[in-house]
Length: 88
Image 1 (cartoon, one colour):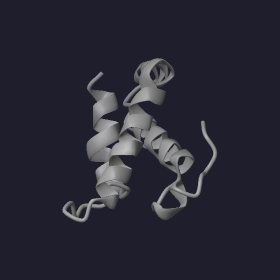
Image 2 (spheres, rainbow, N blue to C red):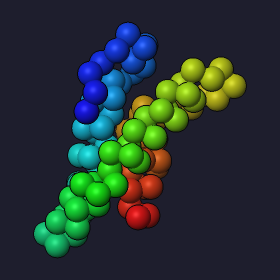
Image 3 (cartoon, rainbow, N blue to C red):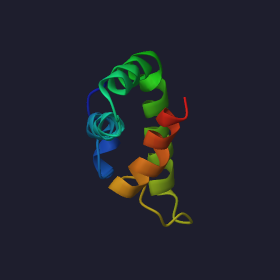
């Protein structure tokens, strides 16, 4: 994890907050202990790169005045980074 920078402070969530919430939502979707174990494995193997990339995208869209959707809402977290993790 990285620490909060001045650049991050202009966004609704820091990277750490974003990462924590995406992981929570992803793990909450597990429907059995075996699925939960598999999801933890996926996070360990691929989570950092995917979550960081999605955070960078969310920041880009937040800064872009032509894009009106806030990527930091629960709905958007579920439909973008969590969905991508589920597609692995």
